[in-house]
Image (cartoon, rainbow, N blue to C red; front, side):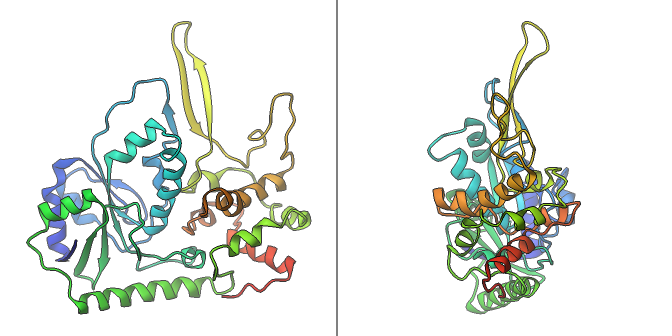
Length: 346
Protein backbone atom coordinates (compact mmCIF):
# COMPACT_ATOMS: atom_id res chain seq x y z
CA UNK A 1 0.00 0.00 0.00
CA UNK A 2 1.33 3.44 -0.98
CA UNK A 3 0.12 6.80 0.32
CA UNK A 4 0.85 10.41 -0.66
CA UNK A 5 0.63 12.67 2.39
CA UNK A 6 1.59 16.16 3.45
CA UNK A 7 4.31 16.24 6.12
CA UNK A 8 2.16 18.13 8.63
CA UNK A 9 -0.74 15.74 8.13
CA UNK A 10 1.64 12.83 8.65
CA UNK A 11 2.84 14.23 11.97
CA UNK A 12 -0.76 14.86 13.03
CA UNK A 13 -1.61 11.20 12.35
CA UNK A 14 1.38 10.05 14.39
CA UNK A 15 0.12 12.17 17.28
CA UNK A 16 -3.14 10.20 17.11
CA UNK A 17 -1.09 7.02 17.55
CA UNK A 18 0.96 8.32 20.47
CA UNK A 19 -0.81 6.25 23.12
CA UNK A 20 -0.34 2.99 21.17
CA UNK A 21 3.17 2.51 22.59
CA UNK A 22 6.49 4.19 23.28
CA UNK A 23 8.01 6.32 20.54
CA UNK A 24 11.70 6.76 19.69
CA UNK A 25 12.78 9.16 16.98
CA UNK A 26 16.00 8.50 15.04
CA UNK A 27 16.35 12.12 13.99
CA UNK A 28 18.89 14.88 14.60
CA UNK A 29 21.70 12.31 14.59
CA UNK A 30 20.53 10.75 17.87
CA UNK A 31 17.76 8.60 19.27
CA UNK A 32 15.41 10.46 21.57
CA UNK A 33 12.23 9.37 23.29
CA UNK A 34 9.10 11.35 22.56
CA UNK A 35 7.66 12.27 25.94
CA UNK A 36 4.50 13.97 24.64
CA UNK A 37 2.67 14.56 21.37
CA UNK A 38 4.38 17.97 21.15
CA UNK A 39 7.73 16.22 20.71
CA UNK A 40 6.60 15.06 17.27
CA UNK A 41 7.10 18.67 16.13
CA UNK A 42 10.85 18.25 16.86
CA UNK A 43 11.21 15.23 14.58
CA UNK A 44 13.57 15.68 11.61
CA UNK A 45 13.51 12.75 9.19
CA UNK A 46 16.05 13.90 6.57
CA UNK A 47 19.18 13.65 8.75
CA UNK A 48 21.53 10.65 8.55
CA UNK A 49 21.34 7.65 10.85
CA UNK A 50 21.78 8.33 14.59
CA UNK A 51 25.18 8.03 16.24
CA UNK A 52 23.88 5.19 18.43
CA UNK A 53 23.49 1.76 16.75
CA UNK A 54 20.04 0.30 16.18
CA UNK A 55 21.02 -2.85 18.09
CA UNK A 56 20.57 -1.12 21.45
CA UNK A 57 16.84 -1.84 21.09
CA UNK A 58 17.19 -5.45 19.92
CA UNK A 59 20.47 -6.84 21.24
CA UNK A 60 20.87 -4.89 24.45
CA UNK A 61 24.31 -4.24 25.92
CA UNK A 62 23.29 -6.26 28.98
CA UNK A 63 20.45 -8.74 29.37
CA UNK A 64 19.65 -11.11 32.22
CA UNK A 65 19.24 -14.62 30.85
CA UNK A 66 17.89 -16.19 34.04
CA UNK A 67 14.82 -14.04 34.63
CA UNK A 68 11.53 -14.97 32.99
CA UNK A 69 10.97 -13.09 29.77
CA UNK A 70 8.27 -10.45 30.04
CA UNK A 71 6.21 -9.19 27.15
CA UNK A 72 7.43 -5.75 26.08
CA UNK A 73 5.32 -2.72 25.38
CA UNK A 74 5.07 -1.79 21.70
CA UNK A 75 7.98 0.40 20.65
CA UNK A 76 7.76 2.60 17.55
CA UNK A 77 11.10 3.51 15.94
CA UNK A 78 10.72 6.53 13.68
CA UNK A 79 13.22 7.47 10.97
CA UNK A 80 15.39 4.32 10.82
CA UNK A 81 17.78 4.41 7.84
CA UNK A 82 18.56 1.63 5.38
CA UNK A 83 22.02 0.92 6.80
CA UNK A 84 20.36 0.03 10.11
CA UNK A 85 17.70 -2.05 8.36
CA UNK A 86 20.53 -4.05 6.83
CA UNK A 87 22.01 -4.50 10.30
CA UNK A 88 18.69 -5.83 11.59
CA UNK A 89 18.79 -8.46 8.84
CA UNK A 90 22.19 -9.59 10.14
CA UNK A 91 20.93 -9.74 13.73
CA UNK A 92 17.76 -11.59 12.68
CA UNK A 93 19.88 -14.21 10.96
CA UNK A 94 21.92 -14.73 14.09
CA UNK A 95 19.19 -14.74 16.73
CA UNK A 96 15.88 -15.86 15.18
CA UNK A 97 16.74 -18.22 12.34
CA UNK A 98 18.00 -21.71 13.19
CA UNK A 99 18.48 -20.88 16.86
CA UNK A 100 15.79 -18.80 18.55
CA UNK A 101 16.97 -16.33 21.17
CA UNK A 102 13.80 -15.65 23.15
CA UNK A 103 15.03 -12.30 24.50
CA UNK A 104 15.80 -11.04 21.02
CA UNK A 105 12.60 -12.51 19.56
CA UNK A 106 10.48 -10.80 22.19
CA UNK A 107 12.10 -7.43 21.55
CA UNK A 108 11.93 -7.86 17.78
CA UNK A 109 8.21 -8.62 17.82
CA UNK A 110 7.44 -5.62 20.01
CA UNK A 111 9.03 -3.10 17.64
CA UNK A 112 7.29 -1.34 14.76
CA UNK A 113 9.66 0.44 12.38
CA UNK A 114 8.95 3.60 10.39
CA UNK A 115 12.05 3.77 8.22
CA UNK A 116 12.93 6.76 6.06
CA UNK A 117 15.12 7.54 3.08
CA UNK A 118 18.50 9.17 3.70
CA UNK A 119 18.59 12.21 1.36
CA UNK A 120 21.52 13.94 3.10
CA UNK A 121 24.43 11.47 3.51
CA UNK A 122 27.77 12.66 4.84
CA UNK A 123 31.44 11.99 4.13
CA UNK A 124 31.63 8.84 6.28
CA UNK A 125 28.68 7.09 4.59
CA UNK A 126 29.65 4.30 2.19
CA UNK A 127 26.60 2.06 1.79
CA UNK A 128 26.53 2.68 -1.97
CA UNK A 129 29.94 1.07 -2.54
CA UNK A 130 28.75 -2.01 -0.66
CA UNK A 131 26.05 -2.72 -3.23
CA UNK A 132 23.41 -1.03 -1.07
CA UNK A 133 21.49 2.24 -1.28
CA UNK A 134 20.59 5.19 1.00
CA UNK A 135 16.97 4.14 0.52
CA UNK A 136 14.80 1.03 0.18
CA UNK A 137 14.64 -0.31 -3.36
CA UNK A 138 13.02 -3.74 -2.93
CA UNK A 139 10.78 -5.65 -0.54
CA UNK A 140 13.39 -7.68 1.36
CA UNK A 141 13.70 -5.23 4.22
CA UNK A 142 13.19 -5.31 7.97
CA UNK A 143 10.78 -2.40 8.11
CA UNK A 144 7.04 -1.98 8.48
CA UNK A 145 6.51 1.39 6.79
CA UNK A 146 9.00 3.40 4.75
CA UNK A 147 8.92 7.17 4.38
CA UNK A 148 10.34 8.70 1.21
CA UNK A 149 10.38 12.35 0.15
CA UNK A 150 8.67 14.04 -2.79
CA UNK A 151 9.80 17.47 -1.61
CA UNK A 152 10.16 19.30 1.71
CA UNK A 153 6.43 19.19 2.40
CA UNK A 154 5.20 15.93 0.85
CA UNK A 155 5.91 12.28 1.57
CA UNK A 156 5.24 8.81 0.21
CA UNK A 157 4.36 6.15 2.79
CA UNK A 158 4.82 2.54 1.73
CA UNK A 159 4.03 -0.60 3.74
CA UNK A 160 6.46 -3.55 3.83
CA UNK A 161 4.79 -5.84 6.37
CA UNK A 162 1.37 -6.88 7.62
CA UNK A 163 1.78 -4.55 10.60
CA UNK A 164 2.62 -1.67 8.29
CA UNK A 165 -0.29 -2.46 5.98
CA UNK A 166 -2.68 -2.46 8.93
CA UNK A 167 -1.41 0.92 10.17
CA UNK A 168 -1.83 2.52 6.75
CA UNK A 169 -5.35 1.12 6.41
CA UNK A 170 -6.40 2.23 9.90
CA UNK A 171 -4.88 5.71 9.93
CA UNK A 172 -4.04 6.77 6.38
CA UNK A 173 -6.67 5.19 4.12
CA UNK A 174 -8.30 8.56 3.33
CA UNK A 175 -5.22 9.82 1.54
CA UNK A 176 -4.57 9.50 -2.18
CA UNK A 177 -2.05 7.21 -3.84
CA UNK A 178 1.15 8.76 -5.23
CA UNK A 179 1.12 9.80 -8.87
CA UNK A 180 3.75 9.04 -11.50
CA UNK A 181 5.07 12.58 -11.03
CA UNK A 182 5.36 11.99 -7.29
CA UNK A 183 7.53 8.92 -7.87
CA UNK A 184 9.67 10.77 -10.40
CA UNK A 185 10.35 13.56 -7.91
CA UNK A 186 11.07 11.01 -5.18
CA UNK A 187 13.45 9.10 -7.43
CA UNK A 188 15.28 12.31 -8.32
CA UNK A 189 16.00 12.95 -4.62
CA UNK A 190 17.13 9.36 -4.20
CA UNK A 191 19.44 9.53 -7.21
CA UNK A 192 21.04 12.72 -5.87
CA UNK A 193 21.75 11.07 -2.50
CA UNK A 194 23.24 8.02 -4.19
CA UNK A 195 25.41 10.23 -6.39
CA UNK A 196 26.70 12.11 -3.33
CA UNK A 197 27.79 8.90 -1.60
CA UNK A 198 29.63 7.75 -4.71
CA UNK A 199 31.36 11.14 -4.88
CA UNK A 200 32.39 10.89 -1.22
CA UNK A 201 33.88 7.45 -1.91
CA UNK A 202 35.45 8.04 -5.30
CA UNK A 203 38.90 6.93 -4.12
CA UNK A 204 37.65 3.66 -2.65
CA UNK A 205 36.57 0.29 -3.95
CA UNK A 206 33.13 -0.02 -5.52
CA UNK A 207 31.55 -3.45 -5.50
CA UNK A 208 30.41 -4.25 -9.03
CA UNK A 209 29.87 -7.91 -8.27
CA UNK A 210 28.42 -9.22 -5.04
CA UNK A 211 31.52 -11.17 -4.08
CA UNK A 212 34.06 -8.39 -4.73
CA UNK A 213 34.84 -7.51 -1.11
CA UNK A 214 34.80 -11.17 -0.20
CA UNK A 215 37.49 -11.96 -2.75
CA UNK A 216 39.47 -8.88 -1.77
CA UNK A 217 39.63 -9.70 1.96
CA UNK A 218 39.73 -13.50 1.71
CA UNK A 219 43.30 -13.98 0.56
CA UNK A 220 45.17 -11.45 2.68
CA UNK A 221 46.71 -13.62 5.38
CA UNK A 222 50.02 -13.45 3.53
CA UNK A 223 49.96 -9.64 3.88
CA UNK A 224 50.93 -9.59 7.56
CA UNK A 225 53.13 -6.54 7.01
CA UNK A 226 50.15 -4.56 5.69
CA UNK A 227 47.89 -5.61 8.55
CA UNK A 228 50.60 -4.73 11.07
CA UNK A 229 50.97 -1.27 9.58
CA UNK A 230 47.24 -0.63 9.39
CA UNK A 231 46.71 -1.73 13.00
CA UNK A 232 49.57 0.30 14.50
CA UNK A 233 47.32 3.21 15.53
CA UNK A 234 44.56 0.97 16.96
CA UNK A 235 44.26 1.44 20.74
CA UNK A 236 41.90 -1.55 21.12
CA UNK A 237 39.23 0.57 22.79
CA UNK A 238 36.43 -1.47 21.20
CA UNK A 239 34.61 1.63 19.99
CA UNK A 240 34.18 0.28 16.46
CA UNK A 241 32.63 -2.92 17.82
CA UNK A 242 30.33 -1.23 20.31
CA UNK A 243 29.08 1.37 17.81
CA UNK A 244 28.63 -1.10 14.94
CA UNK A 245 24.92 -1.88 14.39
CA UNK A 246 25.62 -5.47 13.30
CA UNK A 247 28.35 -6.59 15.72
CA UNK A 248 26.86 -9.15 18.11
CA UNK A 249 29.73 -10.84 19.97
CA UNK A 250 28.84 -11.38 23.61
CA UNK A 251 30.12 -12.77 26.88
CA UNK A 252 28.14 -14.85 29.37
CA UNK A 253 28.84 -13.87 32.97
CA UNK A 254 27.88 -15.75 36.12
CA UNK A 255 28.09 -14.09 39.52
CA UNK A 256 26.39 -13.95 42.89
CA UNK A 257 25.81 -11.22 45.43
CA UNK A 258 25.05 -13.72 48.15
CA UNK A 259 24.77 -17.50 48.66
CA UNK A 260 21.13 -17.51 47.60
CA UNK A 261 21.29 -14.88 44.87
CA UNK A 262 22.77 -16.19 41.64
CA UNK A 263 22.86 -14.29 38.36
CA UNK A 264 23.72 -14.97 34.75
CA UNK A 265 23.73 -12.25 32.13
CA UNK A 266 24.88 -11.58 28.59
CA UNK A 267 26.98 -8.51 27.81
CA UNK A 268 28.58 -7.15 24.66
CA UNK A 269 32.10 -8.34 23.97
CA UNK A 270 34.81 -7.11 21.60
CA UNK A 271 36.98 -9.18 19.26
CA UNK A 272 39.72 -6.53 19.53
CA UNK A 273 40.25 -7.30 23.21
CA UNK A 274 43.24 -9.50 24.04
CA UNK A 275 41.19 -11.95 26.08
CA UNK A 276 38.41 -12.40 23.53
CA UNK A 277 39.85 -15.49 21.84
CA UNK A 278 42.00 -16.70 24.73
CA UNK A 279 41.18 -20.27 25.79
CA UNK A 280 41.74 -22.39 28.88
CA UNK A 281 45.43 -22.76 29.68
CA UNK A 282 46.23 -19.31 28.30
CA UNK A 283 46.63 -20.17 24.61
CA UNK A 284 45.50 -17.43 22.23
CA UNK A 285 45.11 -18.04 18.46
CA UNK A 286 45.04 -14.26 17.94
CA UNK A 287 47.80 -13.26 20.29
CA UNK A 288 48.94 -10.15 18.42
CA UNK A 289 46.99 -6.94 17.87
CA UNK A 290 47.19 -7.06 14.08
CA UNK A 291 45.62 -10.54 14.11
CA UNK A 292 42.63 -9.29 16.12
CA UNK A 293 42.41 -6.20 13.95
CA UNK A 294 42.39 -8.37 10.82
CA UNK A 295 39.78 -10.70 12.31
CA UNK A 296 37.16 -7.94 12.40
CA UNK A 297 37.52 -7.36 8.66
CA UNK A 298 37.48 -11.09 8.00
CA UNK A 299 34.34 -11.43 10.12
CA UNK A 300 32.53 -8.66 8.25
CA UNK A 301 33.47 -9.54 4.70
CA UNK A 302 34.61 -13.18 4.63
CA UNK A 303 33.16 -15.36 7.39
CA UNK A 304 29.64 -13.93 7.18
CA UNK A 305 29.68 -14.15 3.39
CA UNK A 306 30.90 -17.74 3.38
CA UNK A 307 28.31 -18.86 5.90
CA UNK A 308 25.29 -16.67 5.15
CA UNK A 309 25.91 -15.05 1.75
CA UNK A 310 25.83 -11.46 3.02
CA UNK A 311 28.24 -8.92 4.47
CA UNK A 312 28.00 -7.89 8.11
CA UNK A 313 29.16 -4.36 7.26
CA UNK A 314 26.35 -1.99 6.23
CA UNK A 315 28.43 1.06 5.27
CA UNK A 316 26.95 3.28 7.99
CA UNK A 317 30.33 4.88 8.78
CA UNK A 318 29.89 4.90 12.56
CA UNK A 319 33.22 3.12 13.14
CA UNK A 320 35.03 5.85 11.19
CA UNK A 321 33.47 8.60 13.31
CA UNK A 322 34.02 6.94 16.70
CA UNK A 323 37.64 5.83 16.25
CA UNK A 324 40.03 7.95 18.37
CA UNK A 325 42.90 6.92 16.09
CA UNK A 326 40.96 8.01 12.95
CA UNK A 327 41.18 4.56 11.37
CA UNK A 328 38.99 4.45 8.25
CA UNK A 329 37.75 1.00 7.23
CA UNK A 330 37.60 2.14 3.60
CA UNK A 331 41.25 3.20 3.60
CA UNK A 332 42.35 -0.08 5.17
CA UNK A 333 40.65 -2.05 2.39
CA UNK A 334 42.04 0.34 -0.23
CA UNK A 335 45.58 -0.17 1.04
CA UNK A 336 45.13 -3.95 0.97
CA UNK A 337 44.08 -3.73 -2.65
CA UNK A 338 47.05 -1.54 -3.49
CA UNK A 339 49.33 -4.10 -1.86
CA UNK A 340 47.75 -6.78 -4.07
CA UNK A 341 48.07 -4.58 -7.16
CA UNK A 342 44.32 -4.35 -7.86
CA UNK A 343 42.27 -1.46 -9.23
CA UNK A 344 40.35 0.47 -6.56
CA UNK A 345 38.78 3.59 -7.99
CA UNK A 346 35.01 3.82 -8.45
